[in-house]
Image (cartoon, rainbow, N blue to C red; front, side, top):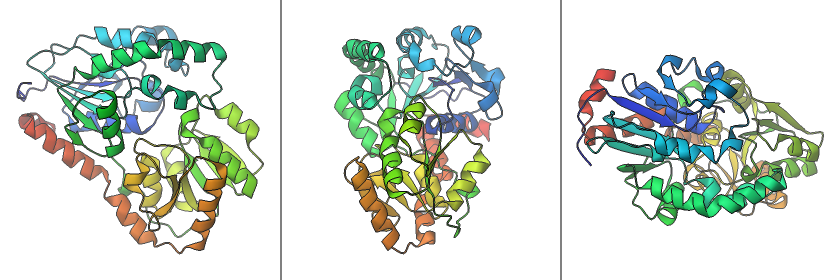
Length: 376
């Protein structure tokens, strides 16, 4: 690994800009932090992201012109490893990979520095059964996924050797990286939470809230079943392939809102009774945003929630991804008095300013201080 040149020859690699989640928030922060970087990706939804990332900076793959920013992007799984493995970025001095699954494989020059911000090792390769559990994917897709899983693992390990510096989004992800890839993690930097735009609220309209991509491994079914059985009002923000099956199992107190704008989501944080995390989160920005509004979080005791939620102070844990366990935690939640200001202070430790400061420090240590100064 060479020292940084300070050049403005910078590319951010992100797998796809289709859904607006935590990984995309991080990629947008990187685009703001660095001076006019190019953005290398596959699909880019300009209607959703064009006001935050200049579309003129974005380089997509040929299928974008044919399919547009398709919501069926997951069906193209076999093509992503090939595409990213062939991406030649050897004219770049700094490549910052915002890696959901595939971006680490891009080719960089020996003189360059390739930094990878890892949300998790490829879930399709290392946690496939959890990904498929309860999934509505057809049998043929399940068989295909299990058939290619060994090859995906080998490819993922190969791709993981390419970055010079690996940064994990949480200690939980650091453990997965070291276990799956067998390589050292240089640093853990938590994702950015925009606490400044969320005010502490004493409004409590009694409803529970989840905001997540509706994928099987997120275990939204646990929240749906618990709310249905206890006849609690549950609002679910987000979309995904599991929405039809979740809607079928939901009772009359569960409402699916789909994608909502940022202002509406913040309003929901401020009005909810509590935020739910029924599955394993790699980090979990939305729960911390709810905490910024002073709202407690009820979370499975696993993954990133163990690093953000303080049991009995900013939320309640439950130990099994089952409706009964979540129901018990909700009952305990109702029995406590919560200090909304204390919950807010915990959220502020994950503020965007902390994320930016940690990344500036890391890039300065890598020799890109002049580059950062040119961005200010």
